[in-house]
Image (tube, rainbow, N blue to C red; front, side, top):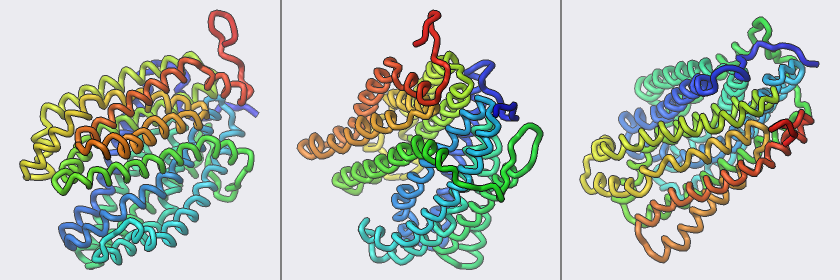
Amino acid sequence: MVQSIGARRITQGVIWKQLLIFFFPILLGSLFQQLYNTVDTIVVGRFVGTPALAAVGATAAFINLINGFFIGVSTGATVLLSQFYGARNREGVEQALHTGMAMSLLLGVAVMALGMGLSPQVLRWMDTPESCLPDAAVYTQIYFSGAIFSMVYNMGAGILRARGDSRRPTLFLLIACLVNIVMDLVCVVELNMGVAGAAVATVLSQGVSAALVLVVLCRKTEGEVPLRLGRLRLEMGLMKRIAYVGVPAGLQFITFDLANVLIQSGVNSFGETAVAAWTAYIKTDALTWQISGAFGISVTTFVGQNFGAQRYDRIRKSVWTCMAMSVGLVGLLSALVMVFRGRILGIYTPDPQVIDLGSYIMLFTVPFNFLFMPVEVFAGTMRGTGYSLMPTVITCLCVCVFRVAWLFTVVSRCHAIELLAVCYPLSWVLASAVFFIAYRRGTWLRKRIEMCGLEPEIRDGKPV
């Protein structure tokens, strides 16, 4: 059954404008998300003390590892919904909407159980200092007790973006960020709850963002499919299609996190000054990767709707439009960072040795940041059609595995921080080249068209 539905249509109109309409709210959301995660650290560090600050910091890798996989899985529902919206398939939208939200509840329970159950042991495996281990365990267990809220928000935000609405998820994240700040001050400063108070504030703010998303999804508006909690169900056929896209994306999150843990161990071998310099460099470069991720999400949603509408010409045009915008913006930002890198690094530390080393490290990475943009754009394009395995394999092998292999061969033999830093642009060049070859061959698009039973792409009057 195919009917008109009330999604924002991005299957017609000026491509660059529509991509930017998605891009800016998603970028703002990423900035709020970073602020959201930083607030706990600042409040705890200033009002509780250094051991408590270390306890919160020690939990980041574990939290990102578990959350990353399950949030990656939820992207499968977003892609499927985008395709149904593009095809104006109301029945498909309704089934995917309720299956996706039911999956988010199931994933939330799984994350809660894994996080709360494994926290103490995993923190020990990570060699968390004994002095902050109890507080770290308390923080993670309370944090994961609210995992359902996080999963519901991320799924709901993905559903709204699939509709063509990227503004309200950003607004809800801003509101949650403000709630988190207020509750941090109340729980940590006024109620003297310490690290536990910071975790409680985070859970409460996540609950607010989840509630706001549910209110919007459940509201009945003209031409739109409302969420009905009584209709939540797991359609096995749709779950398989969601998992086909989402599981590879989730695995990519895990491999990135594991690779970064190993890279960090390599940085640690250069001593305290190097660790501080590397940390300041990573924080300085954070905006670049938020821009990259925002373009990736934008092109994924855009391609999803246009693939459902069988507008293959717009898919191909969007690739190069998004590529030009992302390379240009990241290139400009990187140039500015290089010019003012000393002053920017000085925000994080007054130590001249750290600033000098951080500035030196950035010579080998920041000028080449634009080389990663093809990876984000090509991967987002393929995922938008539902073709998720290939971009995951390419990214994992050419970025993650390459970096680990470089660390254990080149860097271990010639112990120089320049060689560690240069593995980043080398991995970007390798991944971009492989993605370009895979994209130009075009088999990924033909396979998805055949699998979905759509009309073939026509070029020069002939099926491709």
